[in-house]
Image (cartoon, one colour):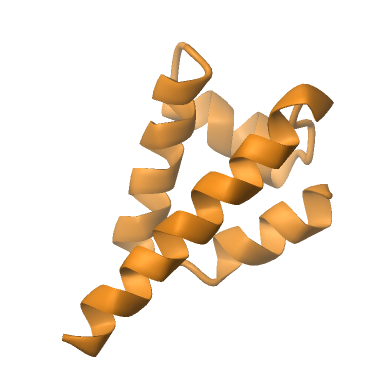
Amino acid sequence: MTDNIRRLFKQMNHNTKEEALLCLKKEFNLQSRKLVKNEWIIGGRIPEAYQGRTVELFQNLLRKQQAMKAT
């Protein structure tokens, strides 16, 4: 599932990526967005219990990004 998460993250523009990192930080009560990016996204070490919710958040953010692009 981590490959799917990385694929979704790569589809995001800069602003959406920043929003995604902040959402994950807030959702999972983490210390820093840098940790999320380096350990979870780049490193592929997303805790298994969080992977499903991460995919859901990323899909929603990509829908939002597409909606903004369409307007």
